[in-house]
Length: 275
Image 1 (tube, helix red, strand yellow):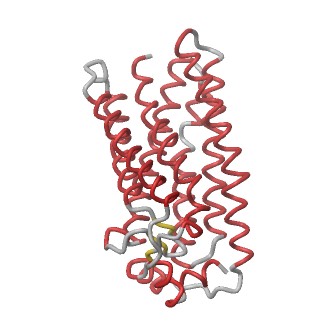
Image 2 (tube, rainbow, N blue to C red):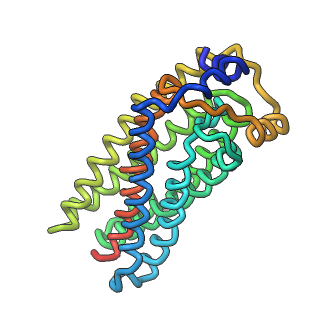
Image 3 (cartoon, rainbow, N blue to C red):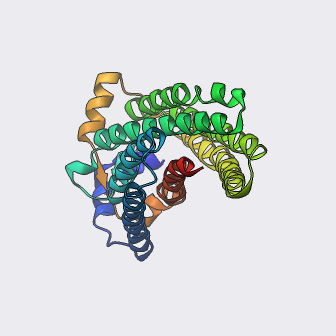
């Protein structure tokens, strides 16, 4: 089993001794390039004189936190439940990475709420204002489910978390589509693009990520669950550094999309201030 393979000391030591695979090297270079690009895009947006409305400033702050955390996680990738990381450094601690991710994802949820609320004002659709109130509660439940998985070593929490993020993306897709029907010109085109991106994202999350975690849950059903205190301490202290492409291969797709398109949608929400 994957969990056992990465936690047996002899195998973990063997994996850490593997030279940096060429595929892994290219992937890490792409993540680093994305981190630099995303910071550059955020700085460009922050210097725009036209983005000085309360909406834009709030979105810039929230997006800045999200961009910064995604950049950090790009440079120090890890697989939380399996306690796998690339670099054997305290910055790779699972607890630290998960805490940063929780803050960033709640900021993104707040962005979604502000974005859909703004769409409600622009399109004159009160139903969107109601939808805007759902993002933070859904994200809070998703984060609790994620922490449950990280602490207990039970993959079912990750499956619940990803299901909730798929729902969030579906709501965003519906909001963009609804607002697009009442818009014209460039804004309409942007909203239609957003509708497609979020609809595809929701479908991929449900079809790939949720299924992946459910499969891991079934495979690792016999792995002992950790109590809260033990799990928190374990997530803070235990990590297994490996450069094996085999270990990272299944994480490449979702991490790359998360740190690219995910971040770009966060930045795109700021642009609604120009509408």
